[in-house]
Image (cartoon, rainbow, N blue to C red):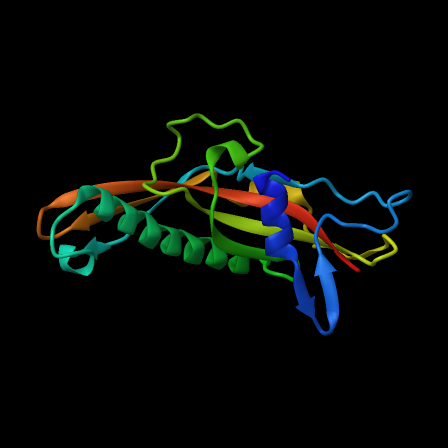
Length: 190
């Protein structure tokens, strides 16, 4: 089982109203044809957030460490990017059942879109991923899917979001460039 399959099962397995939900499993495989899973970057223009985010070294550690600073900036930037994407989806009427943004660890090799190795700038592999979930009954019947199709969702997501952060004691600055992706996947009752 590769990492993506494991993450899908762990992230998508839950108990909801007494019904056990799993991802990627079907008892009726002969006629069951779920949507294909994919993680793709947004196709809209990259965005830079205008923030006045400052971090003091004392909130990180008693000694200044640029790696630790860059990691903390990446974490805080991912929160800002998540909040920004959530607002954008809400403003565009795209927040519905089956569509949910989250902050996740996402390596470049897990993205199905062509990506340049220097396209992102992040001390740790954080991203904002907007889930686009299809839900099937145990017999393979589609129970629920988002009303907005996946390509439309991607067209409303920026490919990346840039957040600049400064550190006030050592006058360091770090610019985090985080990916924004859509993740189409499915779950099924068992």
